[in-house]
Length: 258
Image (cartoon, rainbow, N blue to C red; front, side, top):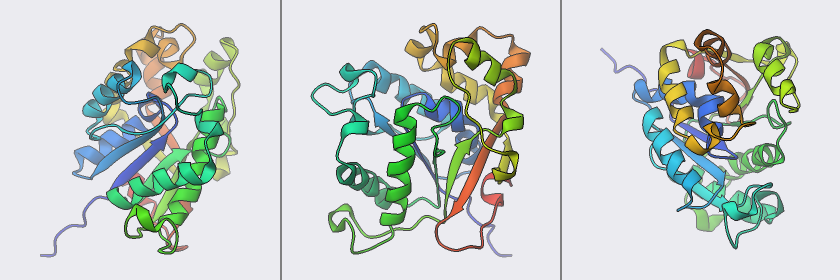
């Protein structure tokens, strides 16, 4: 009998330590459990920082390997990467080249990142991560670009982590309650709705690994940690994505949902 197809390798690219767990922790845990190669690139915070150490703990829970850091500073926390520019201020070509190197080394089938408006809260680092990732995913497959970053590799698809208008629910109310914006997309833009209930304990354990964020009053991990378990479960059990094809127009939504 023929060998069953290997599960697609997933590379997630997010702005800050904790984004990977909050936004795509279920999908990462699900794919790792199925035997897929999974990894996370984080745009901000430097190696050696407390947030990088927390990220390492979270990725160990999710089965997503070691942290891969671009090493830029958070837009709102300059000390997150001393002597490095804010991610939003770094030369675009430099940032894209750094990410192209990760894509070509890891050779993912699919890449996951923030949507164009930066998720529910629209953080500027989220928005910029989307831009850099979209450019890098396309550039990684073009041999004449970034020749020093390794042999070309083109992922099959780019998945944008997002929230439909009908799915913000209790989370939208919580964010609005602490003065944060709530940005969603029309329901018809959602191409993959993933039930991550079986991996929810891993996802939540990964969120809690970001200890400094859990202790920060207005952060999303802190807000979620104060909720009753049933309410928190309702918020975290579903992940939504919009798929952008890279290789062809014939996509297979089973990559995330099968």
